[in-house]
Image (cartoon, rainbow, N blue to C red):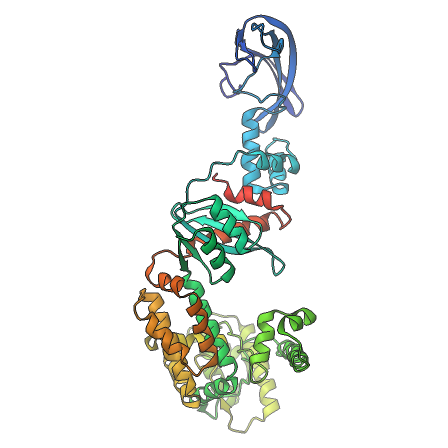
Length: 543
């Protein structure tokens, strides 16, 4: 009986009417008195009876409907303007409600967890019978908990619509909870929020000048802390820009390392630029390169005509970062070769090459031989490999000695970003080939050694939380003859206090980035079409 009725104390069951697809419960009120909602005077003088029809939680997958027989009472207080009132069942249903409180609570939980359309599909399967609009109304009408005072605040921007509209997320770093979403990322909006919510002592943020100014005006006494991850990202970008204007030296250094690993073996066939272990054709990558090269020429042409970078990006529908990289490069920036997945056949390729050069081109026989050596793959993989090997041999000539770069372990030419990260890392963190590449690059371009020393020492300060050497490092970086690094140092100088706090403070924006990931998940679950108020309600929900 208890699980059938929303409140067994206030209700009593009169009748159960089973029907097709639903169960109807006829219930009556069990209380003798009722309280006037205006004057709070109890009355035991009934005026009349009426029946309310309510939806309740389903029973064993079957919808439940209530026929609630309730009463009206005369108010006993002669001074009350409400002469007649309906009795309230505050533990069962809200005034004028068509669903019980416990059903509304279940719909609210589904709405917060799944949103509108997905929640409506689940509610139909559970016999709750709610539409997407009903669930969203429950989410919007849910009571919000009061915001506690915040001492350590983390903020960052997030995309409502990428490259068009952004908002700001505010996170209480001590409680590890999102406390608000702002509709934009303007400094004035952050300033107004901080003035309306005093008590913030520490604020972590990215390198945004707008946020810095908003925090300074909204909470002048708060300590600002730059995020360490953003500092490392800015450092990598600076080194990458420096290498972008020295691409010829990067390619030359990579070629020196590659040539040092080339072996002369008459029994091995040249695999060329792409490995024969892959079934992919190189034509698609060549076509992509041609497209990128055409866009590169368009960017350079428009730049020579005096067009600004952001106008070029809008005209060609490109990213500003890509446009800037094309303009700053000393030539067309080639992409690093794709990293191929290791194949089972890869370790047996030298043996297949030897047998093939010796005159054996029977795929089944070669497959049996390498199976005896431990190969677990199918014969068709060996057959496909021999087809490509035969085609390559016919194109090159079978009798000549051919140079080959091993497809398994040899060095590959790095991208500019990967090369930048090798310069930032400590020497002990690099492989022998990576160290050889860095040494060759330093020999070809002496400025690289200065960039490496400055970058590695700055990363060391961040990872070890060493704030004391920063001022000396900053002075050295500002005097550097490398333009890209000098500009990076000037940016740090403008934000020096926040950067120094980042080198000594335990706080960072790591939690904020995690909350942004959760926010993105909710936004995508809502197909990106939710209004800010609905998204905010779901993000701030503590369920």
